[in-house]
Length: 237
Image 1 (cartoon, one colour):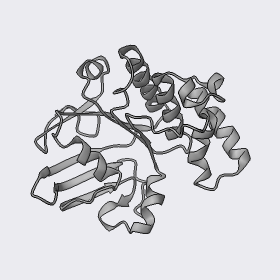
Image 2: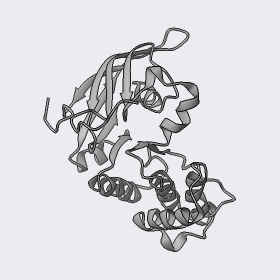
Image 3: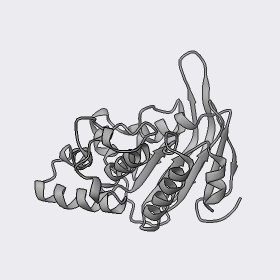
Image 4: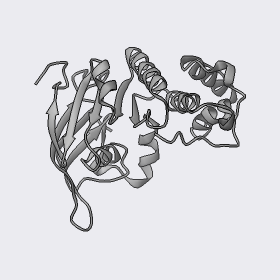
């Protein structure tokens, strides 16, 4: 694994990345991007633009057809299959559809993410309580998903993504199934998490949310980066 000791080393680096699926669909074309540790980046674009492929490559669900990808010190092109799970533990992932286990309460859903890492019971109790506190749901710890609103369920999912203290949160349309007021609260929570030092990458189609938060915005259209208001160093391009 490559060192991250140099603070100027990008957390995410795409170098000439293209992805063509079987059948000939060109999902991404010659993407060059750097995202540094501590950034908050919105990924925007119309349906079919290539956003999902971009995220799947970062999560190592797909591999590039050409080009190189490095994330959090891992060279994803060279990552062995047996090491993918270890790599993904450095990421916290939040989905649009929550993906909570319906038979587990909020505490148990968050704790599940720690059980798979072999954490001790004491570590789990402390870390889960802390994560639920961060998202404002300590009082809902014993509630099942069906007993919570959509916004509350998404906050549980966010706590689950946070509990292992990842370097980066990947949020894929996290406000897609909640009302507009809760959408703003979810992004504000992500903003607070970012202020504490965690890199946040959020895919969204909600342009009003993007305009309300002064963050870096990368726009993808027809598989290409067509706009990027930051250069990975806080500058504007």
